[in-house]
Length: 410
Image (cartoon, rainbow, N blue to C red; front, side):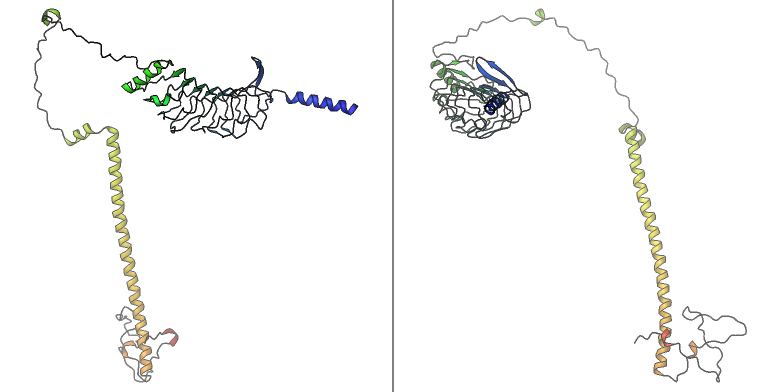
């Protein structure tokens, strides 16, 4: 028995706790209906914890962007009669988004960014009577029913940027009584667009782009002939054929302007002064006249930079050319000395190979010291090899250089 009492108390407090209004909303009773107002709370979805018994649900001025399929039915909001989703960011609505809302009569989807909706999206709300789609972006509408609904009576398409009205746009709204097409980009309308709406009682066409041509005037006449409340846009009435326009021309006497108007005759007392002959300007004066101080300063800097660049280029070109010539001369001199040494050694070795008993030529013999100690002139620019001035018969010949110091090129 005690357990049953505890279970009953737990169930009772659980029901009470689940019926608490969330902090983002204001829950109240309005005209006998359970009302939850969740306005301007940065809500991103339709489920914020409001009790399922809600009947008037306002989610205006939030950041809801999509309405998924069965989004209201899955959370149990099947008692809704009024739903306000205005001033959100809704751009997509699922085909079965409003499934389960069989009691819904008023739906506000104004001031969103809807570009297209399926014509059957409201088919699962059989009691829907008022639908507000104003301030969306239905720029291009196809020649097909915009909405298919048997009970819809009020449709607001104000400021939806609609450019044209196809013939079949309202062909599946048999019980529509009020239609608002104001503030769009429509320039003309035909009777075939309005004929399918047989129960239309009020029509709003406030617009600045209407072309008051005979076709549009004929549409306005048809609207008035069907007893539809409508504010006429073309205020200027066209004259009837039976009306006669008579214009009377009254002849008037000629009037002397000098007697009526106060006219003063201007006397030209100005003296024309011939311009003096001016002296031709010097180049400096022309430059001072055509250019300001800042422009002259900038031009001077540019000219100085140009002269500096050209002078630097010429100086570097000359220095590099001089270094290149000097380096080339030194290299040529080194090559010539090296080639001469190699030729001497090769000739000595080659002579030794061909004639082993041949004496060393006098040209390459070592010269004994002369009494005056004067060095003879070098041969081929190499010191130490001079012409033999004194020949001694008993003296042995100069041997050839060692093989490791000679290179034979055959």
